[in-house]
Image (cartoon, rainbow, N blue to C red; front, side, top):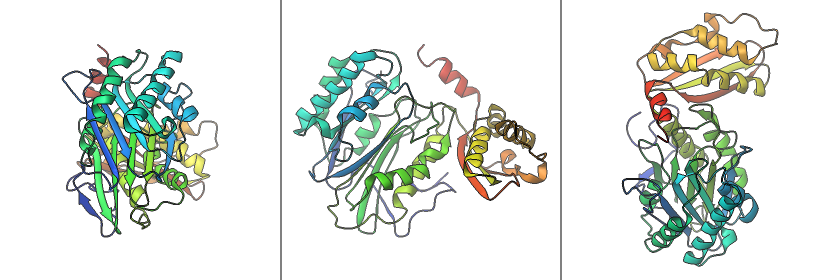
Amino acid sequence: MSGGFFRSRWVEAPAGVEELDPAQLAPGFRAGGVHCGLKGGGKTDVGLLICDEEAVRSAMVLTRNASAAAPIRVCRDEVELSRVRAAVVNSGNANAETGRKGYEDALEMCRRAASALGVETASVAVAETGTIGVPLPIAAVLSGIDAAAAGLSADGGGAFSDAIVTTDRWPKRCTVRAGGVTLSAQAKGAGMIEPRMATTLCFVQTDAVVDDPAGLLGAAVDGSLNRITVDGQMSTNDCVLLQATGASGLPLPAGLLEAVLRQLAIEIVADGEGAARVGRIEVSEAASAAEAERVARAIANSPLVKTALYGRDPNWGRIAQAAGAALAGEDLEEIGAESIDAAELGGETTEAEIGLRLDRGEHRAHVWFSDLGHEYVRINAEYTT
């Protein structure tokens, strides 16, 4: 990948799009971030985001993990997801598997942010990411919220973005303008990545008119953040928030949100813990959409395929094996080399296109995935030690 924000071979920049300073938020939004001690080295770990327009329209998608973290449960139970004015975030502690105390701590984060910002508690979303099973040092976090609230600015997107990263090697953010509207976005993610709703933490702000935020966000996520995997692990904390003020009086250009989320999604895969290459597997001629997706995910999550991607080994037999395992019990004709396009698996490109034709129907699905190398094992073997 090279060039500007829209730099992946799999993402087409919308017509007339202009890339702006990613620290500059869409009009009507302010943000900031501070260090409160959750992460070492003085790194930013608490962030605040506020929409100054009372009439904001919003939508959220939340992880489907049955062990959802406290902030996810608070968003489900306490937050009016269609009118979120603000978001409070922290990184370094997931506040997951922390019981009733964790829930109360996440809710207290909403209350403190609401008080500091002068909005209703029910209009504040909360998101957290980091180590699971560790009590949240709530006093430090609340002090961080107060400090962040004192430093909010229209160009605070960079600080807010820094407040959500964990093992990321680089920030994932952008601000773009097209069709008279501005859209800014911040995301994080490198490990524990395979969604079934969204993935990672991601926040999107725009001054466009959006009549159906939930429908728009759901469709855009399905074509982007729901199409990726790093390690086949569904996070307890995944969430995506879209806020739209409508202040521009203009609609969001068709495809703009999905293009932004798709590039962010591919950035997450490219930043997969220790990753060097990104693959895209497209399964075609499947008997059903569900079958196509099942096979694509089985290939994308296969350690054998992922290590072949890492080693630039065009071993098409590993793809055939993973596809056959996904369809175990089916009456499947032998999958041969003539049905598999694996040349780029062993090529020099950092973005490898791979194809599999099943000859069972007319349905297709694709998944972006990272390779698997030595560094992934080191990072995760030493995550808390």
